[in-house]
Length: 579
Image (cartoon, rainbow, N blue to C red):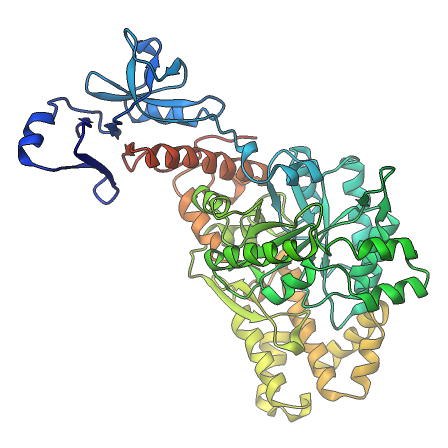
């Protein structure tokens, strides 16, 4: 490769396909006159700008060769300059820049500022949640996003949401006690999963959060605002001495639909506020304040993710949600605009950087954390996840919204859950009772899927919902089809728990929530110390994703100024643990 000196009538453009720097001349005569006969290192090339900056420093400090250049670029705490010296392009992390040529000064091809990963994203996210990076680990139900996961990330100054969905109140209360003891000052969040068929369970979770002063929740799977959610939001509002509204209960909404985003971008519904005041749940003053703030502080845009998902592309969702947020900000003029974050597909430094570059205030990881040692998943499940490819996922009926036909994305590698669960929903759609299903099919279900008699499962189901939500049993008593749905949900619900506990003999029934991002992560980690599941820690992965994103961001800055890098440098590879 060559360094080309740029003079009038020469136009330079990056040539990414060839990995070189192309120069276009207005005539062959000028080409003959202007081309220099010096050769550049194969790692970097570029053209000296027509009005270049100059670098002054010790030439011996310049780094040449891919390894040395990568080391300088990865030192994110110092600015870097690409300097032309004797026909070679080198990198410096020191020296001084000037626009006036001086003795010994060298022309600068490109430069980039210091960019520690803590500077990525919206600084108000970090301030509001008391964290050092615009990043959090999203909730995975049934405590897959476990206490250990939340505590490990919290101690590292990173936010994580405990996977309270699907857990009984006593289990959630145990998690609250453990997490608050380990992180008395935070940061942490707890998930609140919308339960359209079990509103009492949702209300009990909210009561627990208010009772134990849980100040941040991640609201998932909501289609509309519920009384419980509004109660949590409004009951945490108070007036500061200066008359401003203090938000004591923060909500991070995880959504994928524009119509749902609009509800979280709006103040609480008037009819719900009025009812809460009449019941004495909130004061009139809190209701008045709730009319002036949005239902959410942050909206996490969830693209093609594991678990509940609409399989939508992040590159389409982020611009749409940003535009919607801007529309509602102009309408309500909130003191603090709602932040928009990105989830679904965040599993490599490239995807992390892409989310930030699209305007995400923060990024959220999910599937990659489930394969970590801190996750509430069995060793068998974690090993399956560590072997997954992008195509090793499928959609299956969701246990919590089975009757509505809602589906979740799961791992199909090493499990038959997706096919078996889909068969159950097919039977539910076609028949009005268990007895209507052909005898041969019923026998097959009991022997190969349930591995128990239908009547035995129903007896256990009655006991389960008597403690959890008795109204479910009351409905099923007069509706054979609803009874069948509850039995089918028995299998769907337990399949996730079998995966978490490592239930022997049930491996082919494991329900493992997983998005294609898991396969992307595995491709990136292949050949590194992160390839085996036994080496994966949530904090370590978080730091690598953020560090890699910052490294690549500086590479992009330099490339936009005309520096072209070898493909070997256009990659961040985790060489050692950042724990």
